[in-house]
Image (cartoon, rainbow, N blue to C red):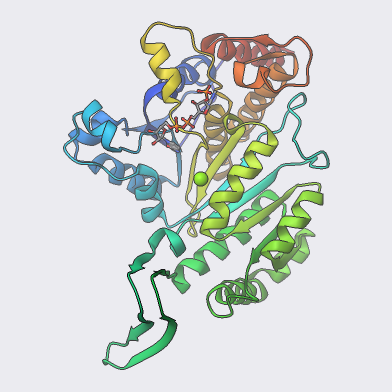
Length: 404
Ligand code: NAP
Ligand code: MG
């Protein structure tokens, strides 16, 4: 059988620990036998980030801008323990943070739904995609502990020196304060990424904030979304039969629990952090969540939503058997290959991505799965496979499908 040709390379960002082991197995078993794979390879494993003073992370993000589509393995974000473990020169920043800052994107996370892994919320029939704004608010806040009585104010000093003040609170005892910010430009990018992704995936878009209480801060998010929608997207949404819907965050949360799914929920940074964990665990498992960073210019970076699965890696190093779920990492590859296929007009590549995804789902639906899924499946007598056997089982399903 002839391999499927590619014309433009994918930017391949390798990573750490158990997911690095899965990465190689996925390429060897599920991709390279079928696709004449072209990638520009960047090793974002922590050792190599340390050797290059993290330059490799910057280079990989710039390559994503050059080629437009990247696929990323999970990576370690160093903490104090990792400083010793890897003898690091510095506590390097989170690669995802660095890449996000360069691509200025929005992160879309969606559950991979499969028969036999049922959502805790009975009426959720279709995936709910969370779009998380990845800049500012509490993640870039300044905070103070106020030791005792005194006055706190917000002070804005314009370039000409003119001051505007707003009283926060007259303290008569100890307390706490916090200053947050966001940027109109970043909110505009967030809005456009969400509208484009909704059109791209043919799903309605919901957005919610607390604009009734936060009449300037949250209200600005609401206004910017509405202005951009009215000017640039209203006609396109109507033509596609899609809806943009704004409501209050508490109303959105209540409606989500009663909804069927099948839409995108745009969230401010903190809401997205919290709600994506809720949605993913309610859908079944973090190992069944895809994640894609979409920049306002239309660059895409695909990854799994979970981390490097450190605990399984240590078992693997001791020679013990692991049963690590590779589905989200496989879907990162298929997402990237499909997007490359769309951009380069290679229908065979898109079809391969669809087939490989279907092979993952049918393998699980036939009762063969990793331990994390076996623990929560509604299928009777699931067969628990180890990391390697699961990938081999997917390959057999894929080959059976393509022969037929
Ligand atoms: P994690 O790798 O997501 O794993 C946490 C736990 O979730 C695992 O111990 C495992 O539970 C379960 N799990 C996650 N993915 C699984 C899979 N594919 N198959 C089966 N079980 C899975 O999070 P972590 O252990 O907190 O973080 C490890 C490292 O990942 C850290 O260094 C962190 O910096 C990094 N991280 C990277 C990213 C990223 O690159 N996008 C994201 C998050 C974290 P059991 O042990 O109970 O089986
Ligand atoms: Mg979180």
